[in-house]
Length: 189
Image (cartoon, rainbow, N blue to C red):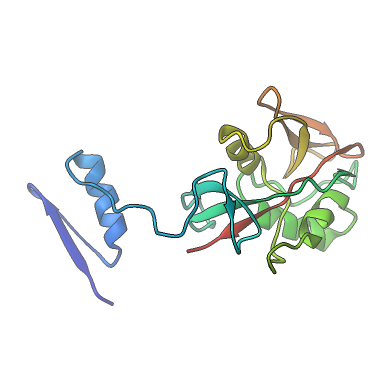
């Protein structure tokens, strides 16, 4: 493994990750510039050829979720129940739609997650029902203008989180009722 050492004043950092070293030192001084975004990545809001949807922005690593780009499927799949009303679910992550969708699919009886998981585009079959934070990121970037969409994040045995795109609010809704579904996938670089 090749190590890189970067120093700034009396600060020295040795790491195998040059980007990490630059990010840390950037926090210490505004004089260090990070490298430009990798080439071939469209602007947020633009269709990403070959990736199955729209670039919904970069997502830094969080917990067990690696850093990635969020790709928003370019089709609204319709309205579906979240499913399994009155039953607890393991789908409680606020930021990991993949883990939530995996849990919902394993349990069965979750139409919104099943619709997202069966979506395919540009040959990709790894779409998920977005977690609450992923839907919020989509709203922040203005990628959906209106409507209420399910997240994969459960609130309780009776409710799951949703995003109202017209007003920009997150709320909870009864799992047995139907809301819109828009799939997402991760693009790991």
